Structures are given as C-alpha cells and as structure tokens.
Image 1 (cartoon, one colour):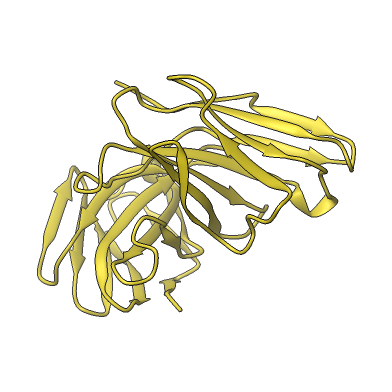
Image 2: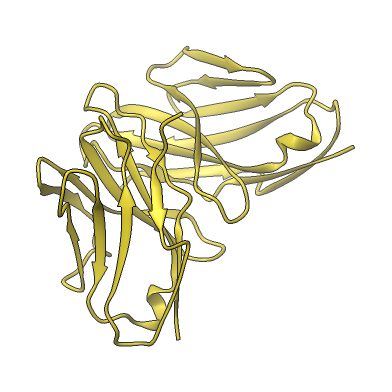
Length: 112
Length: 114
C-alpha cells in the first residue's frame, strides 16, 4: 500500500529563518511526487512535481528535491505569507496511476 | 489564469438527503477527480473520470456515490443518502492529460450533514 509520511507535523519559524520539510514515501513505482500548498478552508495549490531521484525544482523561496525514498521542501528566508500547510502526494505507476496519495501535511507558521 | 470552480462553497443537508456537488474543470482538461478531506485529516482520493467513464475509484466511493459529466463543462458528484460521516470538504480537480498529469484543485465544497 502506498504511504506518505510528512514531518514535522507543525513548524514555527521566525521570518528569515530557513528550514526544510520532509516527505517520506513508499510506492511500488513512483510516477510522480507532488508538493501542494493549502491555506485554511481552501483547496490544494500546486507547487512542484518531481519525477526522478536527483531532480530539483525551485520557485521563489521554495526548493523541492527528490531521492528514492524521500523529498524535501526547503524554505529559504521565509516570510509570513509563506504560512500554510504544505502537502506532499505521490502517484504510483503500478497501483492506480492517476490518484494522488497525500500525506497529512506540515503546518508552517512564519512569524514576523 | 484558468481555474477549477466549485459550487456551492457550503452545503448543509439533513441525514438521508441527496446532495449534488458541482464542479467546472479547466476547459481543456480531460481528466477529472473528486477528493475529500475530513476536518483535521488527510486529503483522500474518491474517484477519477475520463472519457465519460470512471477510470479509478477508492473503497470510499461506494454505491452511495456517483459522478457524471452532464454537459461539456460540468462535472458532478452525487451522494444519494447522506450520512453524518460524509461531512467533509470535497475537492474537485482536473488534469490535462496522462503526460501532463498535474492535478489542479478547486476551492472545495464544505458539506455539513446534520
């Protein structure tokens, strides 16, 4: 069964304090790993997709990386507007290649 | 920027009643999905839909649930006889193709079953 585990559950940072969020996954064959941002009461907003180990993607203060077992979302010099829940999800080539299997997310709070 | 639109934003219903949640996917997308998120829990896959038929469904998606694309723009989720445990946020998503498989989500419909 596909599994996605995210850590930490919650993270509190000061503005400008860089950190990383972790997503560990277990799949038969990875089709893609996705990072989304979710604000309270809203739908997931797409950030990145990664397809193979060693791949990296960047967008503003965020950088996502991928290994064969986990992905990291690095946040450099965060701002209060980066406060949100960050969700990791995987697609498995072998067991239902379309559905996304989500982790429980990391709630990030960035204080000014 | 194209977006997935869901209506209503909040639906309150009595247990045992039927509800229909509506979605307008992004116009050139071919794959459509429903997910749900019970308060405080993870986002869970319900069903995917392609070429006017269900392509994949989860164990949650039992006979009480159905999906339909009644016209060229709308995609609906029907729950025939709602239960208290159906209370959740329901998200519609769409993706362009198998190759371009990024799923874009709507803002969701909060379903409250009383």
